[in-house]
Image (cartoon, rainbow, N blue to C red; front, top):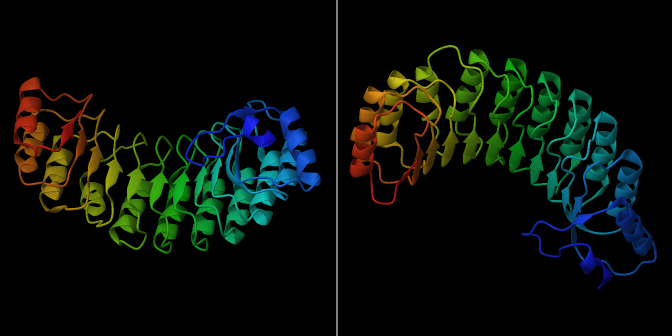
Amino acid sequence: MLLLDLLDDKPELIPKLISPDQLLMLTSVSKKNIPIIDINLRIKQNYKLPNIIQLNNLSKRCNILVLYLIKCDLCDKDAKIIADILHTNNTLCSLYLNQNNIGDLGAQRIGRALIFNKNLTKINLMCNHIKDTGASYIAKSLEINTTLTELDLSYNKIGNEGAKQIAIALCVNTRLTELNLMSNLIKDSGRIVIALALSYNITPLKKFYFGYNIIYKSNKEVIKTIFNNTTLTELDLSGTFIDDNDSQEIAKALCINTKLTKLYIDNNKINKLGGEALANTLCYNTTLTMLDISKNNIEDSIKKLIKLKCNKTLQIL
């Protein structure tokens, strides 16, 4: 079939890049009612608004399952077309909008569309220009949306107010399993409310990435709260200034936590005491399979001790 020359019909694989001209050809084929298989679209970079409109037309005539619009220079105006697709398309399950120029207005449009969308399970908005207002609209959609399971808002400009709205959503949403908030502008008050929301165990979150946000105060209380969560299997606290005191709290939590399998606490300020605390607790923990303690100040002798005491299935980085 002609489409197989342009697209990959296997959802688990990233499809070939297609050009605007090829998109126009697909649109004309769909108008002739020629049968079209379920497809994944990965659009070439520098994809401009007129072609986005063609994409919208195509989405109404064939089953787009996965849509990649990465580094396409999309702005808030383009996000309106994306929102229209989310309103009308009933097959799209994954949407990648990474590394574009979508701001608060675009996030608002996408958030409103997510309220009504009943099929999308994954959306990636990494590396855009979303601030508190845009994040709040996305968060509001999570209070209503019942299908989205993976949300990536990393490398944006979300601060405390946006974090608070996300925390409220986490107290209501019962579907989200993966949330990435790494490398935003979330400070102490924002991370505390998110930690509290996670401790309520309402959202069945399994993977939470929160590294490289702005931390001024001790992580001790936040660590205690997060580790009260009983659903998380993967947790990233990289680059959050975790010190020896915080490491001791993590060690205590790992003694009783039976769910967490991957923990990333690299690029922090863990020294000898924190390393020893982790070493002493790992002989009791049997569920952790990955522990990243790289780029800390832990001596090689302590690292060897950690590896000696940990369970045989645990990989230490």
